[in-house]
Image (cartoon, rainbow, N blue to C red; front, side):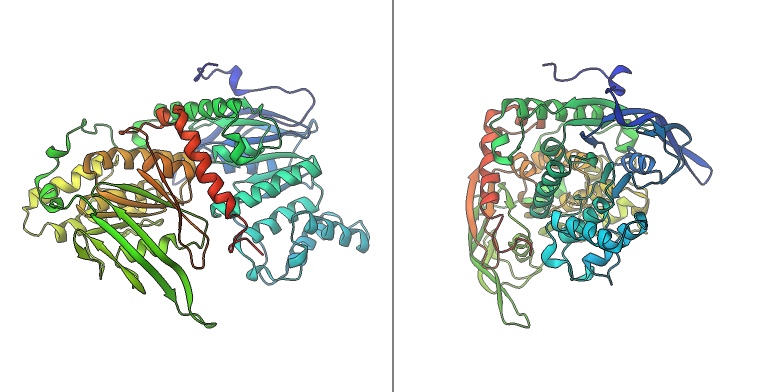
Length: 571
């Protein structure tokens, strides 16, 4: 099988016999401040009745515009959307939509929210018939036990189930899912993926899922369509998912067809990413690879330490929070040793205390018992020797990217000259791909570019310890790949001791020397430690092709599956 095939017009328009949904030359542009941006341009796609198609694309490639066009929520500039061969002229009950945001009425209960849709679409049916439609759909998504609960009392995963129920309750011919799970944690996301798969088996409806998660697409879809980068996006290529159902996450790692297809899709996306204009990255003349000893002088001096072994030690770490019902032990008996330059990924289900451990290591959260020693000094408070990158960039929006980085540098290098400090700032902004955007205000940068500033700021502090708390969790998976590569590239030069909290199994393996897996909370502990014996520097393509990768992946997935129905399963 050829890993990468050139994009052709033929690849952009797969034809199926007797399609229930057809897009013909769909084009849509938006005008703002006098500038017109082409989002979709001549997009063609056919979907067969009962088929499940996943659409993958980068941020800004027009995925949501595509869903809105199919749903009849926006007016096209050109082209048409055909449902059963009839041109769509607006929204209709034949298409149900679930967006990323819930759009539910919080003062109504589950039943009331679903009933609103049924009553609006089927006023001709009797009261009993409508009540049965509401009840059966709520039961289908597993919310019968919560039908009387207000939306404001539900978790994020349960709210999204209500949104799916509302869309299904009207019995649409086509179900449109616009990244419905992207804002959820990994455990809740996997549960709803299972729910969607179960509904697909029961309802046999035509489903189009927009997602940025390759594994989600492979787990659920019959066919995967990939949008090119745009502007003026079209379908760049489609892949048939010839993987037998049922598809069980841990067992997929043993399926050669799955692994080959996954690598092919990742390779194709990497090709699209590498072909995009360099202006979107903001760095057209990044410096060539340099050895670590050629890093800026001020950086080398600040990072110097005679300690190499047991550089970071967490011993008998415990954290108890007071609650109205009594003390709650979040984590306990956390013991971990790291040598200087180690990179550890911390993974586990939501609520297992990963971020609690990280904030204690940062000196931002008081330790209840035990202690943390860094470079032979016990951590008692926050400081620039411990740099933290959170999920949200936490930048000052009225300052430029450069000014946001300079603020920390001025404190860390007080005895350095202005030119030396500027050297550090510019070096790391260029390294993260912001050489041409360092003077832009933070408010003018995309989420991905803002997080690049956060990474540059963290590295520029010359920290003894770098702490990453799901730094790419708010980004789509494809932008996340970009920033993972940036992180790997810069870390290879600094070898700063690093702990990264993540929900992403592939990310944990790609980045780390060890993956530390935590049990569910409360009373969470370290359940397993997995050494990652993959050569550095790491290249994503090489890692995916290494036979050991899928073995590591299976070990982590099995551990997470073991705790899937533990203390933090939804109720």
